[in-house]
Image (cartoon, rainbow, N blue to C red; front, side):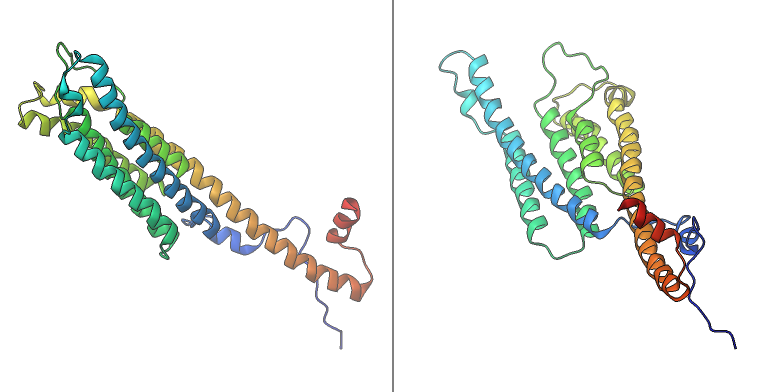
Amino acid sequence: MANSVLIGPPEGSTPSGFGISRGRDRALPDDLLRDASRRLGIMSLISAALWTLGTILGHIATRAMTPPGDPRWQQIEATDAIAGISIVFSFAMFVYTRRSRRSPTFILDLGLVFLVLTGLALGLVFHWAGAPAGYVIQPEISWIGAVVLMFAAIVPNAPRKVLVAGLIAAAMNPLGMYIAWTRGMWDTGSPSQVLLMHYPDFLLVGVAVVIAHVVTKLGHQVARAREMGSYRLASCSAAAEWARSTRRRTACSRVRRRSS
């Protein structure tokens, strides 16, 4: 009766599990998701700092552009209240990302909600006081489009989620303009002019989706590389056992000899 021996897989072979997982949606590795959730906390803290500096510098600029003795720069307006709420919410988001025991996936989804609410705050602040004298509606890129791009690059998430959240966030500019119009602060003309003014932000959402796809694809490649490394380690162990029983050299032993 022939003795059964343990043999290693042929050199250059690929584990069958790869063919199965290649066609399905893969989750990013847990450590990458945890790092992304921590970056979300850092972005939230930066957001709180920017809201604070923007509000203070806005009052300083108002003082510099108004006649001496004009008290308007000291007045607290609705935009200051919106900024204050955003500061509190941003700082609370930072604390939550540091203390929460929820899964990183949930925290990243919550980050998309944070993105939409930040877009709402920006849309209200931009349009609350109305248009400056002589302002002509024309296409422009706002801070909302920039924030959507930053989220896609720094806080990775599924491209479909980035698309939905990005479109909602970009729609906060037309919404803010409409709210200002109901208060008599904007003469928007026709709805087509509103879309004409803010369509660049919607184009940036498409760029953000591409960025999210690239970033998540890199994460998937990391996951596959780790799987390949684990498989190589297991196959080399089996091949080493087979080599000891047959006194033959294997591909793994040749690799070890070259590296040494």
